Every structure is written in structure tokens, then in C-alpha cells.
Image 1 (cartoon, rainbow, N blue to C red):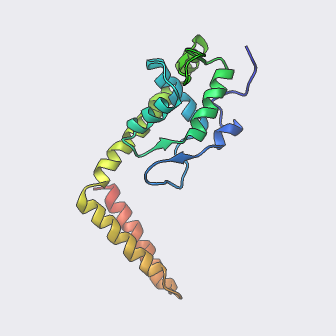
Image 2: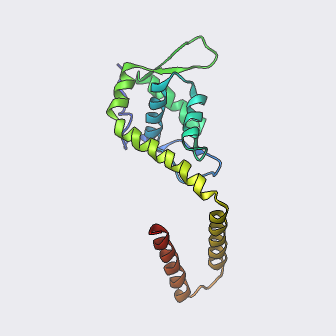
Image 3: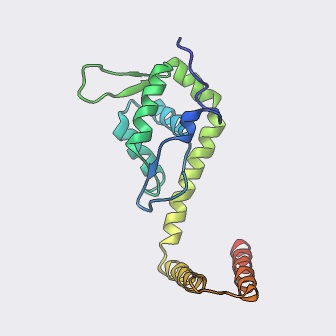
Length: 179
């Protein structure tokens, strides 16, 4: 078996690359490459799939809140194949479908708890999307953003006004947390 970096370690340089898409165009990185690989192994443990199907599986899990880009999926499919964790089902097919190998099943088993946390995290995003789309919640969030942006766009905000604004945000966060 070929020697490669540990596929699921934090010091894996490929874990810090790649992008993510989604209809909200999130600025923060949703998942590390190592987490994407684990999700891919999870979905491939259920049935053989090609890259586009894996993208759609992740998107469906998060109810459209997160869609991994082809630029993260396809290089990681190649890496998993080189690690012999997955293999091509039919090399002659127009689109490569992959299935888990024994090594892939072992990697998945070794990372079972992490996979469960990832699935929960993406499922929670779906709940967030549903609750955030309640019209009254949308209006309240929009009103807060507008007020905050208008106030912060003003020059020469006094220290006292800034401290009042910060305290109001902390108070709102505290009330929301304990609601």
C-alpha cells in the first residue's frame, strides 16, 4: 500500500485548502478537507457514487445550506483512491463511480465518532435554515443589521456610544442564548 500523509490529521496541508459554495456564499470555511473525506467515505459506505452525487448528498444533508465545490470533492476523491480507501467501480464508464474498499471501511470505522459529529453539524444547519427563514425572524435580523451598519458607518463615534452599542449587543446575545 502506498504511503501518504495521515488523511484525517489537522496538520494535513490539503485539509486547509479547497473552497465551499452554497447559496449564502459563506465567508468562513465550513468543513476541512479531512472532514469532507470522511463524509465522502460515509456516503460511499451506503452506495457507490460519483463526485456529483457526493456533492448532492452533502448538500441534501444540510438542506442546501452547504454545497462543497467540485474543487474540494474531486481532488479528495483522487487522494482517497491513491490511499486505496476507494476504488473505481467501472473504469470504462463515462463518469467514474467509486465504492469503498476494505481500507476505506477501516478508516471510516476508526473515525465513526467524528463522522457522527459532522452529520449532526450539517443536520443542525438545516434546522437553522428553517428557523432563520421564519418571516418575523428574518425581519428582526434585517432590522438589527441595518441599525448596526448605520451606526457603525458614522464617523467619530464616541467611546461612550461605542460602549453602549457593544453592551446592547452583548445583552441581546445573552437574552437570545437564554430564551
